[in-house]
Length: 155
Image 1: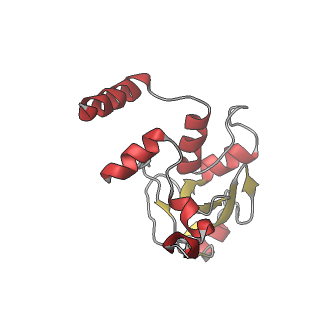
Image 2: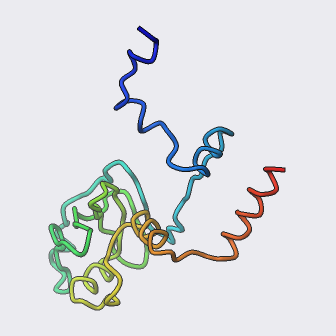
């Protein structure tokens, strides 16, 4: 029996590169790590602490409890307990991909009312970036610079 006969291909297959470029990147130990431009938002793979509304918030006529509302791919979990800002209340939302982010009440109310552009489904920044890349929307100058850098390293 060869040593490869004992290898479970279901365990090895996810480790194999998908195409020539992925193989070249994996062989060099290079990696790509994208960070979203959060712009005041918090993005986390772990749950973000939430708190119930306090008496002061419940006493305001303009306060609306948004917990449990689904907008696009996001579900509102509650008010962010540890994220404080001066320009509106931060709510914790969970995307279907499992990521947690904070969003403002204005964004949630506007998306629930249908004020978002008709082609924009509310989702976390990671899913939005992935969706844009799948649709072929990218910055052509950055893509050309990256391709030039890769070609320069091959020589």
